Image 1 (cartoon, rainbow, N blue to C red):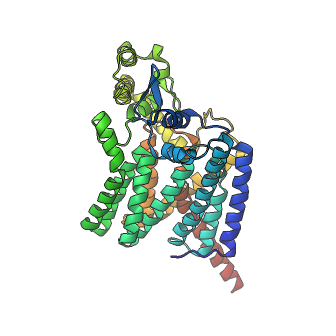
Image 2: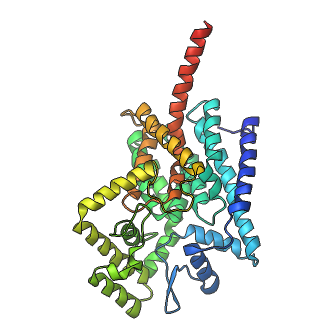
Image 3: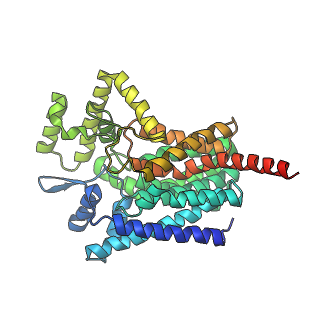
Length: 413
């Protein structure tokens, strides 16, 4: 369904550009830090995708997904000046954010009328954390853009399996897997749902083949280096960060505090750093950390079961013990709480046992929260579900407006 730039949508885009430009000017990162900075530096200096070095030798990366560092690297190649490079990145983020707004508007129009869609698009465009995201050197803006392409084409496929939407769904799925390694779980879930609904095995196989072919160069790279067929291997790191004696909802990287790690794990880590091997360092380290995380959980399973519930509720609503700067700002907390409450009411309102769009969206919502709660929850994670939450909330808005209009008509009559 084509989208024409009517006055309402143009107004939303104008507000969005202004708000995001102000965010970039006020809060924009002044350098590429953390893992992204290390990955970018190793690509520049050593021509290798690596997030850590041992004795000055870069270790091949299997920990971080490759898409965003490659994106940064390709943008940086012709640009020597750091400030100019950052401004280009922010400009691309801004463009992706505006494209996301347009796609989200199309998503809403697939489900709601134009008035409800306008409300939803306005919420998405002006959601404070979404505005702030473009000012950060982070993969989240690209992730939101790709997820919205994924969701739009998924909704179209839930209505009817056609090859144009199959192709766009497949490419966005592949890109999301390369951006967030765990996303393959949600792709598989979606393919199973589409098969159960339409029973078109041939088209599902074509979709699967396009996804595999798209990510195959990186799968081959990892198989050639590590001997495993995977995009990322960070389950151990993520599980231990979110499940250790010191951890909180947001996670604490336990391996930084090796003095409190059980002696056998400490010995394995020391041997890995002192004896190698360099080539498979990331893979072997993740296995060590996975064993340690499992050991902690076995020692006190009830503690980590309670922690899982706490993470689940923190993702669904808010983290009552967050340590993130300005997390409790009213501009962040108030919109998030309101949207979360409306989301739950929306799920209750539309739940049924049919294979339809609303049940797929609900399944996608809870499967995301359920998976990430095994690990740890960062504030930006909620942005990946922003479109889903707004859709579910709009069912409540739609219900309220219908009742209001009925009462208004009855009064007029």
